[in-house]
Image: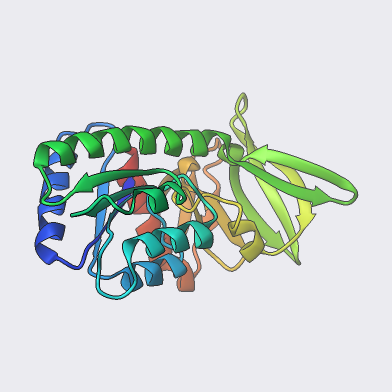
Length: 255
């Protein structure tokens, strides 16, 4: 799933870009597009503060309230991340020098030419998919156990569980298809989640975080894993809605 935001105080521009992206989405085979719309920079940053992230953002520069340039700067500061591709949309290009300081971006001039929109988005999409796949395969989880420091790629983690403030890292033996404890360290589930990719890991209980890649299917109160014993990872009542929503979003992105 490639997450896209359109932020513009002109609803006609939002609708035009959205409909064009929906058309592109219907042509894709390896990814799906998830599109969110915002009519102000304040609304967009509010969702960023709630933990949302996007691979590509269409950002109007001249909006009522906070400008698109300032939104871009705050986005970089709040997420400490230059991977999000911002496609700026404006009637003027006098902001170019400011935009260069913000990081990865593209520029489309208003009124929007649909051919230019398609070409710019296609190039941004290729970059976003490349960055997404690289992140999934190479993101490193680091932890300290006793006096020793350890690291493991997140793609190898099946799930984690907290046992009296000790986090157990569960991995899978690929030959026997059995689960085993890779390591233990002192931490909390909240701290663990900060290092894990949000589109493939979900907190399904007070003590459990699961990698959706290893989930065979979901039941009423548990994720069933793909190991030889079909291990059950419980889903707490408080986390049921988020677990189901994240799981089905993950499946859509994997199709």
